Image (cartoon, rainbow, N blue to C red; front, top):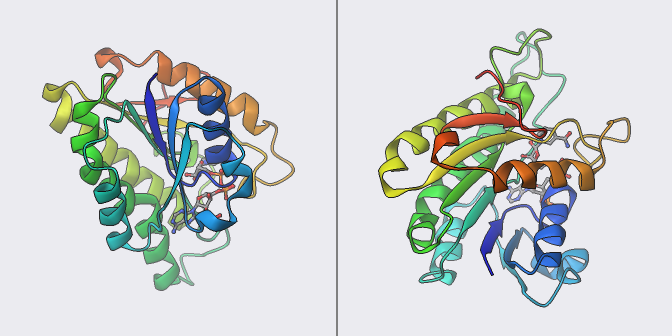
Length: 227
Ligand SMILES: NC(=O)c1ccc[n+]([C@@H]2O[C@H](COP(=O)([O-])OP(=O)(O)OC[C@H]3O[C@@H](n4cnc5c(N)ncnc54)[C@H](OP(=O)(O)O)[C@@H]3O)[C@@H](O)[C@H]2O)c1
């Protein structure tokens, strides 16, 4: 069966990805900042292992890659993310919070992708997916605000496009996916989508990825989004 690595798998969309792939018999490498507290994740099935990963610590990314050395990965889902601040104004920029948002949402996913390239090369499917956001689409932005989050996801999109260009010759397929607005800790109770529906939809998009979709940005229903 195929293998998948999912970051931020202890709650929200990451947990639902882990649950669904484990249910379908995939071998799941799930990451959490505190594996010992990830009880729901641990209950997802016998072919699931939990690995410590804190995206604010590049040493943690290197340790994860060392743990997984020699293991083929068919699919990597860079899912973990933070909202930063919804309220930050141009007149009150919190630089530390901005940096932290970029570290988790943008820089660390690039480091992770680089560190796991050897595993993807060993895998059959060679799919490298980041969970982005429609809020990261510059073309779609009509409401402004949410500076750190929007900027970090727009930059993540650019990074994924670069990865798509740089590694296409090795057969790696890199795509960004927006999950829609989903009822998780980040999305809040008022969101229209439940995690099961969003993840089911995103898995369909991931299933259909071929080299023709390399370097594209999709929403969870499969339509392409403007960068
Ligand atoms: N929910 C939505 O409506 C929505 C919409 C668009 C895009 N997204 C994107 O979808 C992805 C998942 O979001 P979600 O809704 O599932 O959010 P969530 O419920 O808040 O879960 C976020 C996950 O990221 C992990 N994480 C945060 N900081 C981390 C760090 N420094 N190192 C490692 N892991 C870290 C969290 O781990 P801890 O439990 O340890 O904090 C948690 O597992 C994110 O990239 C988000 O931007 C969500």
